Image (cartoon, rainbow, N blue to C red; front, side, top):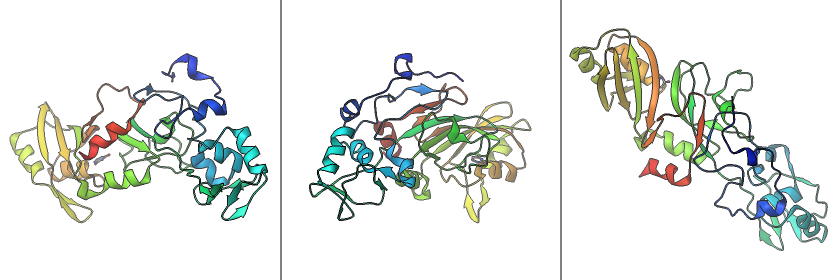
Length: 285
Ligand code: URA
């Protein structure tokens, strides 16, 4: 698959100073909000690297630089000068491994925030890809995102379902979005094994039990022969297939085309789009 971001950014190395020019709002120089990608992994900024590297331990000088304290070289000097404490202990070796997600790091007595930036992607999941972080699984939806650090899908689409799935590293956001009380609508294009009658649509609207809870669609609309749009707001496992089967039909194709105000639109199969903070916020307004 081909990368769609500009060639002039593809193999560029950014100096520490350049990284530091990007304030905490920005996610780094290599990814522009709204860019569409459909290809191989993209390098991320120093800030972004603080996430998964932190699980193995990250060099103290790198953590400080990634947190915007100063350039890497300047951070090394700050450490050697004895101005840095980790969990209350003075550390003077820049290569000391720390965990930025749990260690308390202070420079001149001031706590350093070493949080990775939050990223959000809208992915057009192809059929056959699995929404999982299990490394043993071959075709994972998260692997389609050109981003080096650990990401996860927000909720799941079945292996046999295609369409819009959100991918992030923001656990708090994912939890909020998936909570049933949020009532965020999800819209699916559903092709079934028969011509749709008025009675079929009525039967569908009656709902069914899923995971011990009664669910019913927010709306059901026939769009053409054997194809309809179903809107749900629960987001329970296999919900749409369960609704269709309970109404006596079989799902032939299932594609999610919308979550709240976010549309799949014409995004290519397998491609993804980085979402801005603003777009993300529209989900809760
Ligand atoms: N409902 C289903 O049955 N499957 C999906 O993948 C998503 C919603």
